[in-house]
Amino acid sequence: MLDRDQVKKAARALLQHEKVSKGAAKKSQLFDEDGFVYVVFTLSRIPPESKAKPIPIAIPHSIHAGAEICVFTKDPQKEFKEKFAQQRAPVVKTIGITKLRKNYKSFEAKRRLAQSYDMFLVDDRISNMMAPLVGKAFFKRKKQPIQVNLTRANLKRVIEKARDSTYMFRSSGPTSMIKAGRVSFSQKQIVENVCAVVEAVIEKTPKKWHGVQSISLRTLSSIALPVYQSLPVLTPQAVEGGVLRKRKRVSEEEEAAVAVDDDDDEEEEEEEEEE
Image (tube, rainbow, N blue to C red; front, side):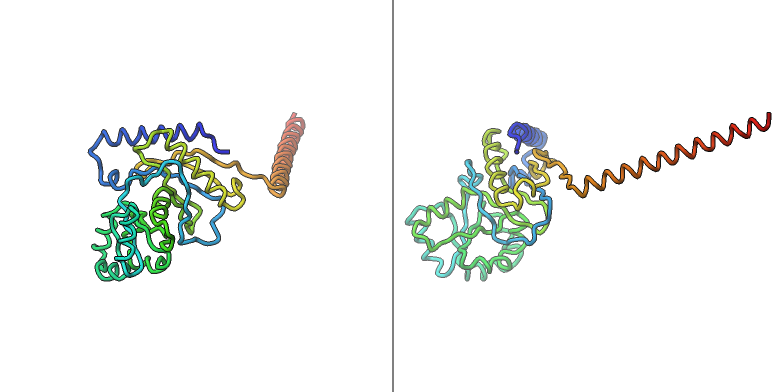
């Protein structure tokens, strides 16, 4: 039900917008820190409950290729650091839970940490401890640590799979934004990623397409460009109600017309009497 041509037009418009914005001024801090293309979903109904655990979505073109990844681990930190090195996993920083608590207490320390790496992963066995330890600095930059299973033998594969996916965060409202590309991508890459994201989200949405009100594309510096808009569903009750309202309106108009005719007849009779 998604019009691929409409996605192409929106992707082309966003890339043109970013090109003009970049040329009009020097690279802004916003552009440096983000530069993502988002798919914005608005559901027909608010989800019954939000879920803290992000849902991974496989996409053909990684939005974190070459990213500097930091992993939060259980203690001892050294054990995981050695395994990452032995397997040549794409991890540049390993921080144990004790070190995280001790060295990153202040808001400023957490803010600097959030700015220092492109992506954060966390051992799923300690993920429930993360919210107070990383604070708002991570959530504000949409860098919430992604849960991974570090008990697996092939840690390189675990890290690469997490890096090459995008993620859906269930919100408490009807709208959610999912990263689907970079402004440095080609139009074709963005379109392919967007279609993969939409397909995955529809599969996880109650009532599938009937549960989605609208889908649009945007960057943080652009307006939202619609690529899908659902039509209102007319239930039998709504149709019957509309017919009744129409009949009532027609009836009122007919009564008003009759009243006007009666007034005209009375005026004619008065004129005849005067003559």
